[in-house]
Length: 401
Image 1 (tube, helix red, strand yellow):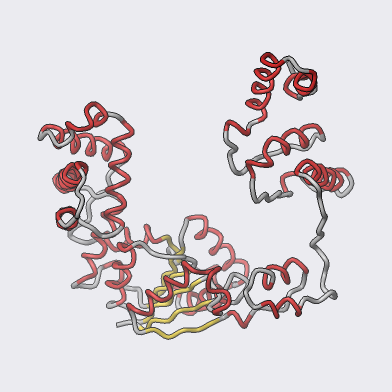
Image 2: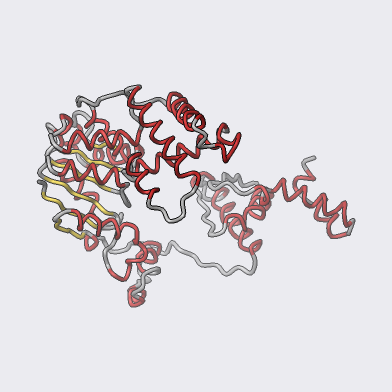
């Protein structure tokens, strides 16, 4: 059984550094699991920059959860290849066809053969597997439903068919990989854990039931398990970190844990932006009294009367920074609370000012400048009023015709 510890603290604290320190102490016997491949690259780069000793790393001490689960399956009796996306689609089509042959999908007619239905079934089964619900357990659940649906038996049969086809083809899917990794660790120590004594898990907001079940099985075979949770446990900030707080409670209920809070390691704010981020949205209003005018002032509040007025002020500020300060447009980020409300005005004003715009969030068609132009055309032809015609003739889209 492992000694389980939770490290809590926001990104501004030394939580991540404390996790990295544990890795550097015994890199060959430690694995650090982070949420994404990008996080793997960023964390490794940080280690190499801040720790000269990290240059001697062998293997992959920092991995994603998927790669960690895959390493546990390797070398086990159930080490089958991961099913390819094309093969998986064929298995789902065959599973649906078998259910159709038993007249379980007659109530939806030809829709059963549509790609959309196949994708929907794939998402449903993936969710069931993530929740650690196998076909037999799913049948037991739907049998207890007070108001059954015709889809219940159909999905249960498709799920059973799909799982049987996977086994007969001696492959497994992504969600099934966590099941196999869990089986490899339940009774015996998986070969992938032979050299690992410490497992660090950092940066996750929560875990799927399959992931957490695997963690519980691995915990029996290592000496140290540390969870790094990105949140502040202060009760006044509980609502801001509700999901991670729930994960913390789940960990404490599942293991005998110790806790270390790193929120007190945060340095004093050096800028107004840092001060506001740390105090403005917390429930303890007394924190606002600690705002100091002596730090670097990098927040400017500007009252604006309308959306257009606000966007024009933003455009002037950006234009000045590009022309006079030599700042690249791609180094400037504009954050909008309601992007759809600003989309048309932002596109028009920025285009007129010669400022390139690269939206991060795709606007709806109704808010696109082109759609707005055609709506004005229809309005002008239907009403033929002076104001509608002027809007049409002054539109940037009309000028580009």
